[in-house]
Image (cartoon, rainbow, N blue to C red; front, side, top):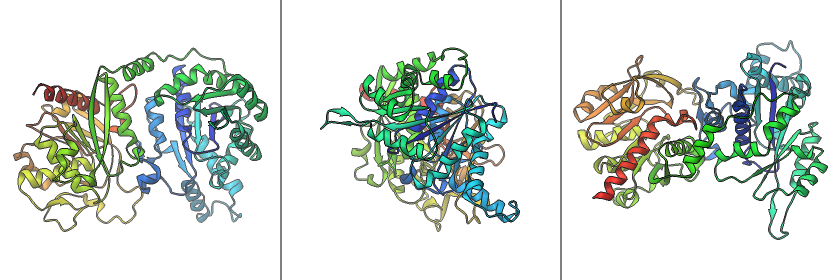
Length: 541
């Protein structure tokens, strides 16, 4: 266990302070120094994973190459570190208890009374240390979800306390993220919430090594001194985390605050080298100094909560910077789109993306959107359900199969152009039973998709049950549809596009899940480029 260093990131006062961004930023700085880093998230909810959670509850469900349905923070980890995560990087209370109860039923505890301590905390620690024991990493950063003081977080906090003793004080440290609010009526920053948060942590037996203080105002020296004095940390271990223009500023802000230096010092490590952040700075330069702008509509049914489409939003940021272009995303609720108002809703857009989702709600609005994009030659990008809506729209309005639908929406449709895979039809459990994770795809060399990827064999991540029904393949091809991406093993359709359209591509997979700062996804980059071209063409008419 001691071959790797363990960093635990906890939070207090309120949720959504940005533990995931701080963990990812620190990981990026350590990685930029030449260290091998991975980050994991421990969530205190009882769901086995977020796969069955409504996006309104927890934002998007992020899927890894190995098919794990995980917390959206793993997306941040991958986007910052430019390296994949796995099932091992996200653990929930539900999975911990499931494992322990399964072992109890198998008689693994030899008749002993199974308790939170030591059995639950031992299982938590086993998962905490698993990645470190592979020998592949120098640092394991573990983000603990929720807030210190929450009832559901207590076993995780206790496991952190024990873990520090298990690996030794020079092999682990705790970073506590807290809030220093500014009260306008008093005209000053208030440290009391931070003091109480640290007090809660101390009551659980943990003295934080470093405090990261979120604030909308700079922390003056006297405030840092006060926090250091009352929270029993060195003043240079009080790190300011001021509100940033973009999350991608945070690694550089943390570098300026010397967070990585403090971590290495606390862990008695000699720094290898200064962080090499040139590529990151170049990305930020392009992001903040665009030479053009496009307006792209994101049509979905969870648009009230942008976190439901977090990876798509970030992929557009990467693609925009790649094109030195600002992407102005317009969130459009698909339930509000009808044949009578579609021109007013979509007419000012340079490109349209129809987002993923599940269920019947808002489907007809998405189909109307596809029809508008097809007929008006507006660059179109459909992801998962978005691609399936494109298939239904073309079936109805081009091929003439007026009753065409997906069996997800209408089980009795006479033309099930989208249908369940045979192996899905008898499944009763909802969790972890979709087509999940990375699958291969072969691209046709004469296609737009091949031109985008510049290679014929790709691998992309999936999360769905329903597929294009190959019984209708010939009819679609006769109508000008190109099935440009096919799974080589199952022959399932992965990519479809239209021949006589400037840019109309639908993917059954989720390309947004593989876009990172240093490697923007080629489909998003090409889509933004097509939107730019459409904007120029529109202006010249």
